[in-house]
Image (tube, rainbow, N blue to C red):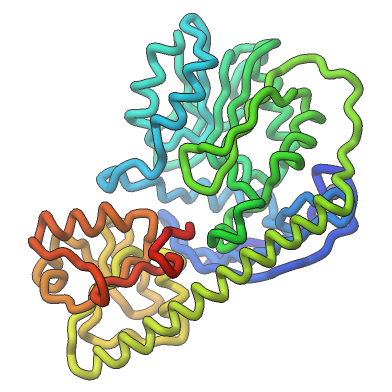
Length: 390
Ligand SMILES: [Zn+2]
């Protein structure tokens, strides 16, 4: 197993070092070729309120981890709303211009619908198991891009300022950068703190403060995004007046702490839900009742930690590359299409990938005629009324 090493990070928003550590945890994750131990921390800058991972992952380790990519699995549908992206992009179309997306992992339908809006499209993708000509924002020529977009990328970037300066450099003067990131203000309503790969937890104010220093002026904010729990910021490359350093003040800092504490309360509830499922599995296992656990995710790994699955329980994942991902737990992951009888005869379905709940239930209905609902269905990482928390 490889381990991500950590190093201290200063606040990229105000440059300060007066940080309040709020939470530490770790995740184990299997990527394309290696299993990684990923420790993570959440801290809040007392000066400006920027919330980020410090100590955070070392740059080289993080690059190796991301290069060991396990890209999205196409057959299960797009986990984002193309319509929400198009609604924004149509306002910034440039029929003779260049559109570049950073992190455009298997963009499919999204880029097909973008093509009438722009003369040329480019994709910058660092994951090695996806085809892409451009591997870094630094590969984009200077002053060459009219509209540059990145969706749920910036929360993964350790050197935010450096990244945004490179984005600004690639844009033509007057060019536009469209950015979506998870919204720290919404953490009390979700489980995003468990997303161990996120090294930045932005509010609109802290992202704006960092972008301003990179030469980007905020021109639009939005709260309807292509993925849940994010916010949208649109910036224009233009010469700024004197940039006043962002200090955020006590309110931003106190609010950031409150948002993290709200997120921790959601995690506590999720752990309670996992413990209840363990007890249920143990009882059902004793009488040989069949159960299907669906998707190898962080939720499943948390369920398996220190718990031995009864023999009547099967783990499935529709991505065949995950079949060996639970080797350390002595488990083989099966593909749903090879486990139809087990799924059909299961008295409990535990979905460990809450975002895919609808697709999974529909797939099972089509393949087996059975619809899991009520007490036969548990969705890990969902709230008391079944709402998805990730
Ligand atoms: Zn700060």
